[in-house]
Amino acid sequence: MRERATRQGERVEQFQRERRAVWVGAGLFWAAWVLGPVGATVLFGVVSFLALREFVTLVQTRRGDHRSLLLAFFGVLPLQYVLVANRNFDLFSVFIPVYVFLAIPVVSALAGDPERFLERNAGIQWGVMVCVYGLSHAPALLLLAFPGVDGRGAFLLFFLVMVAAAAQIVQTLAEHRLRRRPVARHIDRAFSARAWGLGIAAGALLGAALFWITPFKAGQALVMAAIAAGAGTLGELVMSALKRDAGERYWGNTSSVTGAVGLLDRVAPLCFAAPVFFHSVRWYFQLKP
Image (cartoon, rainbow, N blue to C red; front, top):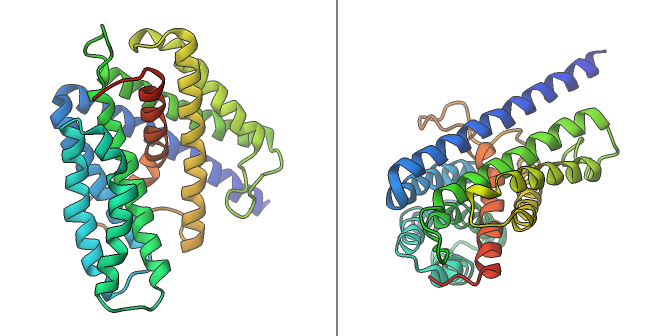
C-alpha cells in the first residue's frame, strides 16, 4: 500500500512538472514574440547560461577544469548566440560540435591534471552540447526566411514548444494508464514503447492542426511535428539517465540563488527537439542563410 501511494505521488509530481514545462515554453514563446529576434536570442542565451550552470552542478569537475568552464560560460556560450543573431547558420551549426569539441580538452590538458580526464571533459562537453548548442536552435527558428512567407519565425517556435509539450504530457499520461513493460527500467520505470508512440502521435496530430500558423502544409506539419516530438521525448529519457548516473532526481538544487532551480528539467525536451527540428526544416525546404 505504501509503495502504491509512493508511485501515485511520483506520477502526480511528474505530471505537475510537465505542466510547468508547458508554462515555461509558453512564456519563452511570448517573450520571443514581444522582444523580436535579437531580444529572443539574448533571452535564450540567459536560459542557456542558467541551464548549463545546473548541469555543471552534477558533473564531476576538478580545479584543472576551471579554465574549461570559463571558456564554456564566457566564451563559447556568447559566441554561439552571436553567430545565431548574425544568421551565420553554417558556422553556428559546426562551431560547438567541431571547434569547441577540440578546444575544451586542449584547455583542460594545458591545466596539467590527468586524473579522470576523459570523464571530466566528456561531462563539460555534454553540458555545452545540450544546454548551449541544442537550445540555441530555438531562437534560430525566428531567423529562418521562407520564400514568400514573412514573420512566421515566432510561430515556428510556438509550434515546436506546443508539439514537444503535448508529446511529453500524453506520453506521461499513457505511461500511467497503460502500465506496459518499461524498455529502460533502471532509467525510467514507466517509459514504454507504446506510450512513447502515443506521445509522438499526439504531437504529430497537434502539429497538423497547427499547420496554418506555419509555412507548412498539413502533411508537412504532421511529419515535422512527429520528428520534433520523437526527439524531445527521447531527449527527456537521456536526461533522466544522466540524473540517475549522478544519483539525483532533479536538476539544480534547493539553495540556488538564481531562482531557476529545475530549469533544465523544464527545457530538456526543447534542447533535443530544437536542433533536430531546425535542421530538418532547413534541409527539407532548402533554406539559405
